[in-house]
Length: 114
Length: 113
Image (tube, rainbow over all chains, first blue to last red):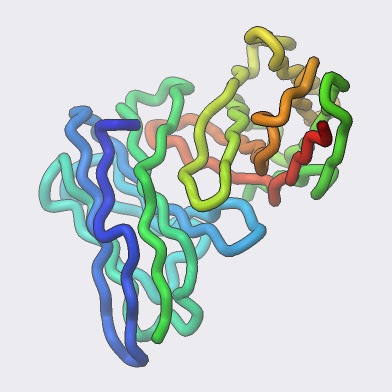
């Protein structure tokens, strides 16, 4: 998990503003994931990417967008269409080789609405 | 899609006693079942996982059992200690390239000294 970094640790969003959360990994992993965690709840998958320049919607993709221009980077943009963005956002990665492998998380970004 | 139910939502046990958390899943194609421990404000940390070709796995005081027929799996913590207090999450996934985890709602475990 030390190979996955997220920034910033805290992020504040104003009404109608788009904000971007950073996720970087130096593990040479092909697959990367974004999850959202609401207080007292489990994690829910927002988007995932199996390879550069390709990504797929998860269970709660509405109001979010992603890009995967580089293997090591998978930024998440929370758009103004996401009406309830306050949550803890976690990024993860795996080799994506189709085997059952451990998924480790980055330290997370806590997003708050002003 | 997959749905994971976790029980109980809160669990309080005396130090030294055992704790058991149970999860059920809906998709029989799920083949990987990790358990995570999350302390307040921190990221989830993997504590143990089990794959569908195994019925039980143990790591010191922690064990996980899997019943594929009934589609449920359980976490067992023995000789509980105060540092075991945390929120525990189960998850399930089908590994086809990307590994999309579906999480349970979590169990808040409190160990009373």
